[in-house]
Length: 53
Image: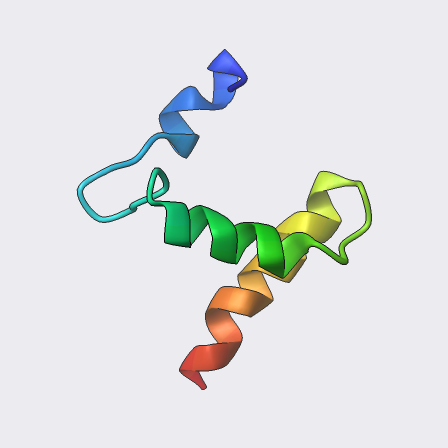
């Protein structure tokens, strides 16, 4: 993990980023995204937001 992002990517009491199911969901959500991080961020945002509505 890039140390400058460690504080933002580390698990917390409300974000289970170290949970295998969470990581798998995130990887599945961005699998068809372009290689740039913005494209991946947008895909992940919609993957989390859309099931709510």
